Image (cartoon, rainbow, N blue to C red; front, side, top):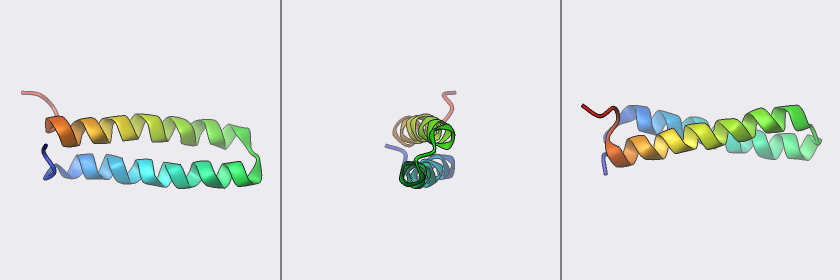
Length: 59
């Protein structure tokens, strides 16, 4: 695990903000922002976890 990678933590933080956006768009029953927030959570969450596990860009 490479927990010292700041870009991985940044991706993870953006994914957390995306979770907040998903909850907010569900409360307002808006589907268009829900799709974008859901994609944000999936993509940034995936890259954040992968960066923290594998240590960023392979050399």
